[in-house]
Length: 308
Image (cartoon, rainbow, N blue to C red):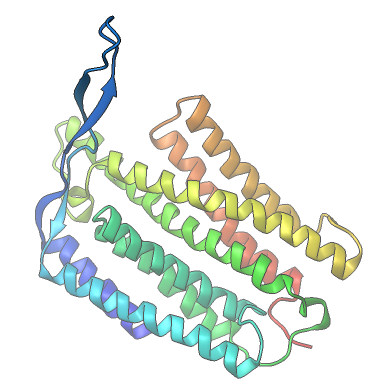
């Protein structure tokens, strides 16, 4: 799986470096039918048109299509790894940090495949697969343990409910964070072009920041309710396991901090009209706290990396 993703990353990078810039999201006119009264009780149709999506361009060539196919193969290998791990352990395969990381990366790659289909955004492959490979490398090198039974506190039906919700939210946050970082690079390149500078390299070949901002925002819209549910489910699980809903341990505190940051990001966009780098930096900060919680806090304080 790691080798497959590494090959896909190489192919995505070659496409970004040498692909020809082509339009990836057409500006479509979408018909909207509305009814208006003409004063005599009749309601003639009034057809209006509005722009659905702005134009965006990105490097495209056959290597990108091949990279997407290789990424799909890696996704299937990851899915097979999760399933066979669960069968080998005789339980849900989300009981330690190694299993958590593999599933987190699986969801992130699934999000990349969805973005490539829905938004034609396979250019995100470079920015998503880099953290995926880093996390999988950490998992294989330092977090791997053989399949085995869980510690008593983790033997609960809340494992597939709480952990899977947090995993899906974390994977979607990874795609959103990658799109946010790509947006910041693209926005910087646009500003340099506006100042009359030449922008070389991959930074100068990225699509416009509007599309990247939209992708980043929509993935957080999907992830935030799941993250909220995961925190609530974790609190209920904690009450069943330890007799309290909230204990202010580091794992709980950092989960809450991430929730506050994402809530502030969505609130600022919805009510304050925040757009551009300042909103994106909040999004990227939220993802940084999610990663910190998953690794530094979970590994040091939660015991999810060990068995009984």
